[in-house]
Length: 223
Image 1 (tube, rainbow, N blue to C red):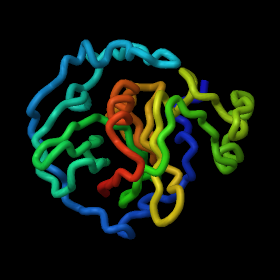
Image 2: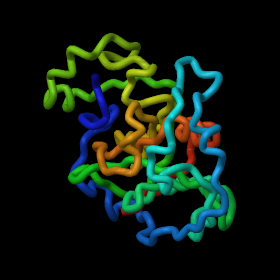
Image 3: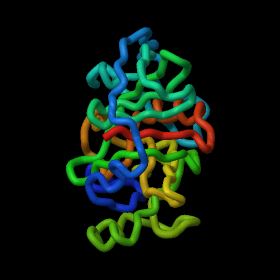
Image 4: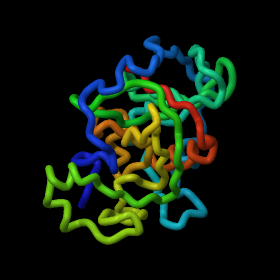
């Protein structure tokens, strides 16, 4: 099975810090204090109304610091901004001045970390995963697991796709950066440095965030 331990979903592999310092991302970290925790049994249960099942996630096995919660937020960003703190493995959606929803995320492993400013330029529900040619060249054994999709050989959107239930595509400097904020088939990896630069989330959390962000939403990835 293709897993995110081996591959970053559709990303172009870039060197460590490839965008660091070139886009003016702030260097300070937001300080947050928990204001409210939702009913985790309810929100991490099976997600309704989906083309494919988003299965329940046993939140009791996760570090609670990486479960969704509302926090008091000290960062300077405007409401509607997404901020990813790769050091703490948290993603913030700024709700209003002084308040944000915080989610746990998985981020780039050593050699694949990056920082900078981007925008969400595309959103996809149950997206196909198409590995770039460079990835196929490095790991030709994955070809046996690929099949035709409208965009080329890959893994069709669904429960096997490494992109999970949703994907938001990050653009910057006039191009697709090759990085995504997306779901995962491996929720146990949330809170770790495991990807090739993409930002992965529990499927229930990416579905929650996806419904609240628009095309053009600014994304700030802290170093």
